[in-house]
Image (tube, rainbow, N blue to C red; front, side, top):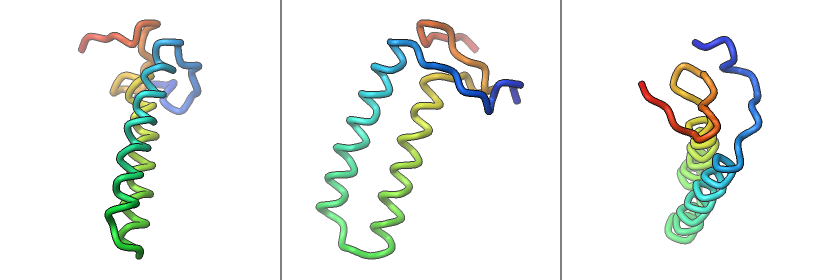
Length: 78
């Protein structure tokens, strides 16, 4: 694990744009699921899980698998 794994890094402008697109996609999917699924604990679990996935998208956009921050362009090689 990288020493900065639990630190906050201000996303670059490009990363902020990617995060916004990911949130928009997650919101669209959540809206569809909300309309399709019957009310109950399973629906709640699905929507909460999708929220978790959306948050991990931000991590993926800003960090490498070892926790290292991506460069200013969000590019990396492994």
